[in-house]
Amino acid sequence: MSEPGSRRILVVEDETLVLFNLEDILSDLGWEIVGVAMRLEEARRLAETAVRPDVAILDVNIGGGLVFPAAEILVQRGVPVVFATGYGRDGLPPEWQDREVIVKPYTQADVERVLQPYSQQACAAG
Image 1 (cartoon, rainbow, N blue to C red):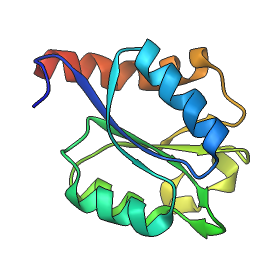
Image 2 (image 1 turned 180 degrees about the horizontal axis):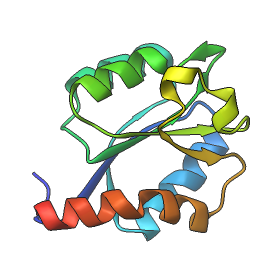
Image 3 (image 1 turned 180 degrees about the vertical axis):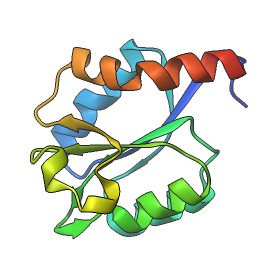
């Protein structure tokens, strides 16, 4: 059980060093990671079963596959998704281009900026 006002996040990232860096960034920003997936099948499973996060950061390309099946599950659960990609918003299919994007390589400031609205919502709900 998370503390009132805690901010929960799900992360999908298949590159170990990028994942470790993102975990450190999220910890520094006060986010509780409720699940991490490095493979598409894990991402789909966590999207369905993880404690409902306040937001999810999803690497678009996971081991040569695309993360959109997991994104669809999360959106159906009412979870906002943020895509991490080196291609920017224009690299997303049209139906996903209205979502937040952090462009790789990103900094802590980039992650903080994109998560700021969700951080405020999570704290208000707690």
